[in-house]
Picture 1 (cartoon, rainbow, N blue to C red):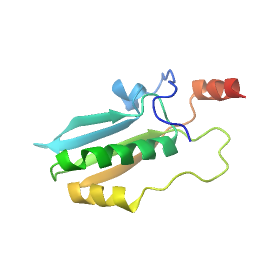
Picture 2 (cartoon, one colour; picture 1 turned 90 degrees about the vertical axis):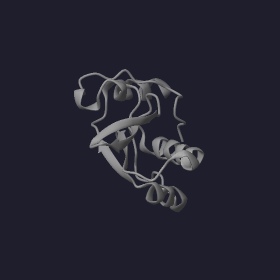
Picture 3 (cartoon, one colour; picture 1 turned 90 degrees about the horizontal axis):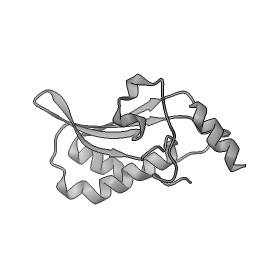
Picture 4 (cartoon, one colour; picture 1 turned 60 degrees about the vertical axis):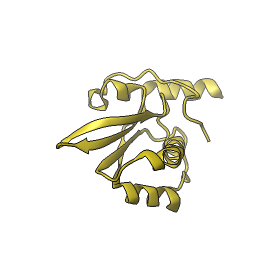
Length: 125
């Protein structure tokens, strides 16, 4: 499994991702006074879902004691893995329990494969 922060993709033509989201596809936000405020950005340049779920779980475990109950949103922007034939990862019960305890919803935002991803994977062969 890829670990976050191991490679970086140069992403363009996806304005809906947002400026930070070009490099950090996993965002965590909290709603305060009707507006969402950034709490954290995870997974610098890693758009594969298994690595992002792993990073989110680690972040939740490390930060669970400092997060007040509220209205949080974790948004994982991912791109399908080149050559994926099934499988993936699981969101653990422990992570889901932390999310329930703090009031966090999970959004999974799928993006089409990026050109640079195909080039990166071809160079790994």
